[in-house]
Length: 244
Image 1 (cartoon, rainbow, N blue to C red):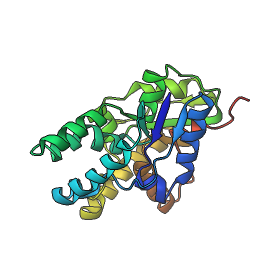
Image 2: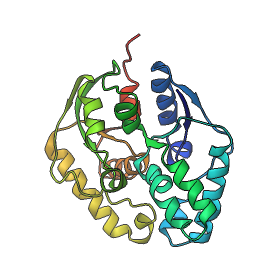
Image 3: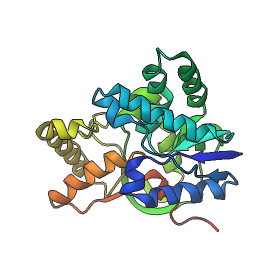
Image 4: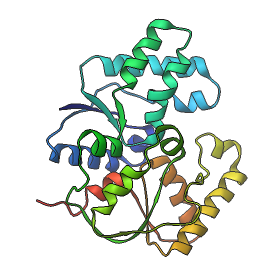
Protein backbone atom coordinates (compact mmCIF):
# COMPACT_ATOMS: atom_id res chain seq x y z
CA UNK A 1 0.00 0.00 0.00
CA UNK A 2 1.27 3.45 -0.92
CA UNK A 3 0.36 6.33 1.37
CA UNK A 4 1.00 10.07 1.34
CA UNK A 5 1.58 11.77 4.68
CA UNK A 6 -0.43 14.96 5.14
CA UNK A 7 1.18 16.94 7.97
CA UNK A 8 -0.93 19.62 9.72
CA UNK A 9 0.65 22.99 10.54
CA UNK A 10 0.65 22.35 14.29
CA UNK A 11 2.58 19.14 13.79
CA UNK A 12 5.01 20.76 11.37
CA UNK A 13 5.69 23.87 13.45
CA UNK A 14 5.15 22.76 17.06
CA UNK A 15 5.13 18.96 17.39
CA UNK A 16 7.18 17.46 14.51
CA UNK A 17 7.81 14.39 16.66
CA UNK A 18 4.17 13.44 16.04
CA UNK A 19 4.82 13.21 12.30
CA UNK A 20 7.89 11.08 12.96
CA UNK A 21 5.83 8.69 15.09
CA UNK A 22 3.17 8.40 12.38
CA UNK A 23 5.80 7.42 9.83
CA UNK A 24 7.37 4.88 12.19
CA UNK A 25 4.05 3.24 12.98
CA UNK A 26 3.00 3.02 9.34
CA UNK A 27 6.36 1.70 8.16
CA UNK A 28 6.33 -1.01 10.83
CA UNK A 29 3.04 -2.12 9.28
CA UNK A 30 4.69 -2.39 5.87
CA UNK A 31 3.14 0.77 4.43
CA UNK A 32 5.12 2.69 1.81
CA UNK A 33 4.96 6.24 3.22
CA UNK A 34 5.81 9.29 1.12
CA UNK A 35 5.89 12.95 2.16
CA UNK A 36 4.81 15.05 -0.83
CA UNK A 37 7.11 18.08 -1.00
CA UNK A 38 5.50 21.46 -1.34
CA UNK A 39 2.49 20.82 0.89
CA UNK A 40 1.41 23.73 3.04
CA UNK A 41 -1.55 24.63 5.26
CA UNK A 42 -4.85 23.06 4.19
CA UNK A 43 -6.54 26.46 4.45
CA UNK A 44 -8.68 25.82 7.51
CA UNK A 45 -7.72 29.02 9.43
CA UNK A 46 -8.73 31.17 6.45
CA UNK A 47 -11.92 29.17 5.94
CA UNK A 48 -12.91 29.43 9.61
CA UNK A 49 -12.36 33.20 9.47
CA UNK A 50 -14.55 33.61 6.40
CA UNK A 51 -11.75 34.26 3.93
CA UNK A 52 -13.03 31.83 1.32
CA UNK A 53 -10.95 33.18 -1.58
CA UNK A 54 -7.77 32.67 0.40
CA UNK A 55 -8.93 29.21 1.51
CA UNK A 56 -9.59 28.27 -2.12
CA UNK A 57 -6.11 29.45 -3.10
CA UNK A 58 -4.49 27.24 -0.47
CA UNK A 59 -6.86 24.41 -1.36
CA UNK A 60 -5.77 24.52 -5.00
CA UNK A 61 -2.18 24.21 -3.84
CA UNK A 62 -3.11 21.19 -1.76
CA UNK A 63 -4.87 19.51 -4.68
CA UNK A 64 -1.95 20.16 -7.01
CA UNK A 65 0.61 18.75 -4.57
CA UNK A 66 -1.30 15.60 -3.67
CA UNK A 67 -2.42 14.86 -7.22
CA UNK A 68 1.12 14.77 -8.63
CA UNK A 69 1.47 11.10 -7.74
CA UNK A 70 -1.06 8.34 -7.26
CA UNK A 71 -1.51 7.26 -3.64
CA UNK A 72 -3.88 4.67 -2.24
CA UNK A 73 -4.58 6.91 0.74
CA UNK A 74 -3.59 10.25 2.26
CA UNK A 75 -3.13 9.89 6.02
CA UNK A 76 -3.34 12.80 8.43
CA UNK A 77 -2.73 12.82 12.22
CA UNK A 78 -5.53 15.33 12.77
CA UNK A 79 -9.29 14.97 12.65
CA UNK A 80 -9.58 18.71 12.15
CA UNK A 81 -7.43 18.96 9.03
CA UNK A 82 -8.80 15.71 7.64
CA UNK A 83 -12.27 17.22 7.89
CA UNK A 84 -11.21 20.38 6.08
CA UNK A 85 -9.99 18.47 3.05
CA UNK A 86 -12.56 15.66 2.96
CA UNK A 87 -15.68 17.64 3.95
CA UNK A 88 -15.13 21.35 3.36
CA UNK A 89 -13.13 21.44 0.14
CA UNK A 90 -16.21 20.43 -1.90
CA UNK A 91 -18.05 23.30 -0.21
CA UNK A 92 -15.48 26.02 -0.95
CA UNK A 93 -15.30 24.79 -4.56
CA UNK A 94 -19.05 24.26 -4.94
CA UNK A 95 -19.37 26.86 -7.74
CA UNK A 96 -16.30 25.57 -9.60
CA UNK A 97 -17.29 22.18 -11.10
CA UNK A 98 -13.81 21.00 -12.12
CA UNK A 99 -12.19 21.80 -8.80
CA UNK A 100 -15.15 20.47 -6.86
CA UNK A 101 -14.84 17.14 -8.68
CA UNK A 102 -11.11 17.07 -7.99
CA UNK A 103 -11.66 17.80 -4.32
CA UNK A 104 -14.35 15.13 -3.99
CA UNK A 105 -12.16 12.51 -5.64
CA UNK A 106 -9.16 13.37 -3.50
CA UNK A 107 -11.23 13.70 -0.33
CA UNK A 108 -12.36 10.09 -0.55
CA UNK A 109 -8.78 8.99 0.01
CA UNK A 110 -7.98 11.29 2.95
CA UNK A 111 -8.17 9.41 6.26
CA UNK A 112 -7.51 10.38 9.85
CA UNK A 113 -4.67 8.36 11.41
CA UNK A 114 -6.66 6.13 13.79
CA UNK A 115 -9.39 5.62 11.19
CA UNK A 116 -6.77 4.45 8.71
CA UNK A 117 -5.16 2.03 11.16
CA UNK A 118 -8.38 0.39 12.34
CA UNK A 119 -10.68 0.57 9.33
CA UNK A 120 -8.24 0.35 6.43
CA UNK A 121 -5.30 -1.62 7.83
CA UNK A 122 -7.44 -3.68 10.20
CA UNK A 123 -4.95 -3.18 13.03
CA UNK A 124 -5.67 -2.51 16.70
CA UNK A 125 -2.62 -3.86 18.51
CA UNK A 126 0.69 -2.27 17.55
CA UNK A 127 2.75 -3.81 20.34
CA UNK A 128 3.01 -0.48 22.15
CA UNK A 129 3.67 -0.10 25.86
CA UNK A 130 3.14 2.97 28.04
CA UNK A 131 2.64 2.86 31.78
CA UNK A 132 0.03 5.24 33.10
CA UNK A 133 -3.59 6.17 33.60
CA UNK A 134 -4.97 8.17 30.69
CA UNK A 135 -7.98 9.97 29.31
CA UNK A 136 -8.58 10.53 25.61
CA UNK A 137 -9.87 13.81 24.20
CA UNK A 138 -11.69 13.57 20.88
CA UNK A 139 -11.42 16.79 18.88
CA UNK A 140 -14.68 18.35 17.72
CA UNK A 141 -14.16 17.75 14.01
CA UNK A 142 -13.19 14.13 14.60
CA UNK A 143 -16.27 13.63 16.76
CA UNK A 144 -18.90 15.63 14.94
CA UNK A 145 -17.80 15.53 11.31
CA UNK A 146 -15.83 12.30 10.91
CA UNK A 147 -17.55 10.22 13.57
CA UNK A 148 -14.24 8.55 14.45
CA UNK A 149 -14.95 7.87 18.12
CA UNK A 150 -14.13 4.27 18.98
CA UNK A 151 -11.05 3.77 16.83
CA UNK A 152 -8.59 5.66 19.05
CA UNK A 153 -9.90 3.89 22.14
CA UNK A 154 -9.61 0.49 20.48
CA UNK A 155 -5.99 1.24 19.70
CA UNK A 156 -5.27 2.49 23.21
CA UNK A 157 -6.96 -0.53 24.77
CA UNK A 158 -4.19 -2.68 23.29
CA UNK A 159 -1.34 -0.60 24.77
CA UNK A 160 0.35 -2.60 27.53
CA UNK A 161 0.40 -1.05 31.01
CA UNK A 162 -1.94 1.80 29.96
CA UNK A 163 -5.27 2.19 31.74
CA UNK A 164 -7.76 4.25 29.75
CA UNK A 165 -10.37 5.83 31.98
CA UNK A 166 -13.46 7.90 31.36
CA UNK A 167 -13.91 11.53 32.37
CA UNK A 168 -16.82 13.87 32.84
CA UNK A 169 -18.25 15.69 29.82
CA UNK A 170 -15.67 14.14 27.51
CA UNK A 171 -17.70 15.27 24.52
CA UNK A 172 -17.22 18.97 25.28
CA UNK A 173 -14.89 21.14 23.20
CA UNK A 174 -11.52 21.96 24.75
CA UNK A 175 -12.01 25.62 23.86
CA UNK A 176 -9.37 25.98 21.18
CA UNK A 177 -11.45 26.09 18.02
CA UNK A 178 -8.67 27.57 15.89
CA UNK A 179 -9.24 31.30 15.54
CA UNK A 180 -11.96 31.10 18.24
CA UNK A 181 -9.23 31.02 20.91
CA UNK A 182 -7.87 34.29 19.52
CA UNK A 183 -11.20 36.03 19.06
CA UNK A 184 -12.76 34.85 22.34
CA UNK A 185 -9.82 34.22 24.70
CA UNK A 186 -11.78 34.46 27.95
CA UNK A 187 -14.40 31.94 26.83
CA UNK A 188 -11.69 29.71 25.36
CA UNK A 189 -9.74 29.72 28.62
CA UNK A 190 -12.84 28.96 30.67
CA UNK A 191 -13.62 25.98 28.45
CA UNK A 192 -10.08 24.66 28.85
CA UNK A 193 -10.36 25.02 32.62
CA UNK A 194 -13.53 22.93 32.61
CA UNK A 195 -11.69 20.16 30.76
CA UNK A 196 -8.80 20.37 33.19
CA UNK A 197 -11.15 20.06 36.17
CA UNK A 198 -12.59 16.90 34.66
CA UNK A 199 -9.10 15.62 33.91
CA UNK A 200 -7.97 16.11 37.51
CA UNK A 201 -11.14 14.48 38.84
CA UNK A 202 -10.52 11.40 36.68
CA UNK A 203 -7.20 10.72 38.40
CA UNK A 204 -5.42 10.38 35.07
CA UNK A 205 -1.75 11.30 34.77
CA UNK A 206 -1.80 11.40 30.97
CA UNK A 207 -3.88 13.30 28.41
CA UNK A 208 -4.02 11.84 24.89
CA UNK A 209 -5.64 13.20 21.73
CA UNK A 210 -5.48 12.79 17.97
CA UNK A 211 -5.20 16.54 17.37
CA UNK A 212 -2.05 18.52 18.17
CA UNK A 213 -4.02 21.78 18.18
CA UNK A 214 -6.22 20.60 21.06
CA UNK A 215 -3.17 19.27 22.87
CA UNK A 216 -1.31 22.56 22.46
CA UNK A 217 -4.25 24.45 23.93
CA UNK A 218 -4.78 22.13 26.88
CA UNK A 219 -1.09 21.66 27.59
CA UNK A 220 -0.57 25.41 27.64
CA UNK A 221 -3.37 25.85 30.15
CA UNK A 222 -2.19 22.90 32.23
CA UNK A 223 1.29 24.37 32.55
CA UNK A 224 -0.03 27.85 33.34
CA UNK A 225 -2.14 26.43 36.15
CA UNK A 226 0.72 24.39 37.62
CA UNK A 227 -0.17 20.90 36.41
CA UNK A 228 2.48 18.48 35.16
CA UNK A 229 0.08 16.09 33.41
CA UNK A 230 1.77 14.20 30.58
CA UNK A 231 0.36 15.27 27.21
CA UNK A 232 0.77 13.01 24.15
CA UNK A 233 -0.59 12.57 20.66
CA UNK A 234 -2.07 9.16 19.88
CA UNK A 235 0.72 8.49 17.38
CA UNK A 236 3.36 9.00 20.07
CA UNK A 237 1.63 6.50 22.34
CA UNK A 238 1.38 3.89 19.59
CA UNK A 239 5.08 4.46 18.83
CA UNK A 240 6.12 3.92 22.45
CA UNK A 241 7.76 0.80 23.82
CA UNK A 242 7.35 -0.78 20.41
CA UNK A 243 7.86 -4.49 20.04
CA UNK A 244 10.93 -5.44 18.08
